[in-house]
Structure formats: structure tokens, C-alpha cells
Image 1 (cartoon, rainbow, N blue to C red):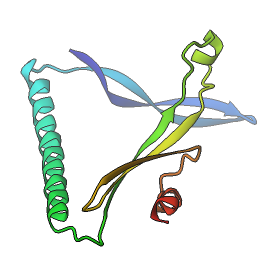
Image 2: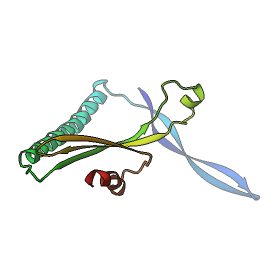
Image 3: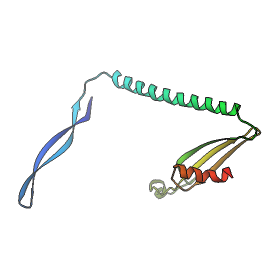
Image 4: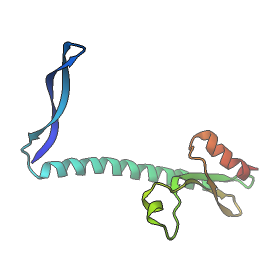
Length: 147
């Protein structure tokens, strides 16, 4: 298998204002790698296991904590579970080619929330033209909900 994995430094001379300068540049070179076909698959499998295991642990932990909060929720309390879908691209149902390929699509942010009380559950979604996802932007979207 041949892959560009290394860089080679080369010097060349350049004349500037009657003086000769030596310039060093780094160029990618192809280097032959001999390995079994299983090796990249083993690396991929190991990395996926690590990432998937961490992701599954986070999901399970968050679900367990949310269940615990539900069980201990008091009559005058509430749980507000929030998330946002960042940079959702808006599209037309039918587009001319210029819009399709011209990066002319506007983007929006969806702020999703679920409000749990002992009596009911309320789902909320706010659209924002702001592409900010920092705490100040989240609080600005939550302010009407909290009022």
C-alpha cells in the first residue's frame, strides 16, 4: 500500500535583489508501507469500541440521573431538559441550481426543551437566527420559557 505519510525537506536557491538565498521547503513524499489488511481494521475497531463505550456510558448515566430526578420531583418542582440542534440548514422544497450549489442557504438554530412537572409534560421548540450556542444565547432562549 502506498500512502503519503512523510515529508522531505529540500533546499533550493532563489535570487533576490542580486543576492542568492537558500530556501528550505517541506514536500510530501509517498512512502511504501507494508502491513497486513487486518491492522487498520483492528485500529478502527479499537477506536470505535472506546468511543462507543464512552458514549453508551454517558447515555446510561444521563438516563439514570433523569429517572432519579423524576422519582424525587416534588409538586412545586419542575425539570427542564434542554438541548439544541445547531446550524440547521434551511432549504426550499424546489430549488434552482444556483441556490442548491451556491451556499445561499440560511441557517437557524433550534432550541428544544421538555418541561416535566408532577402533573404534565410540555415540549417546546424555539427557532433562532443566531448561530451562537454559548450560555448567554441559551439563557436568552430560555427566558420566555422560565417566565
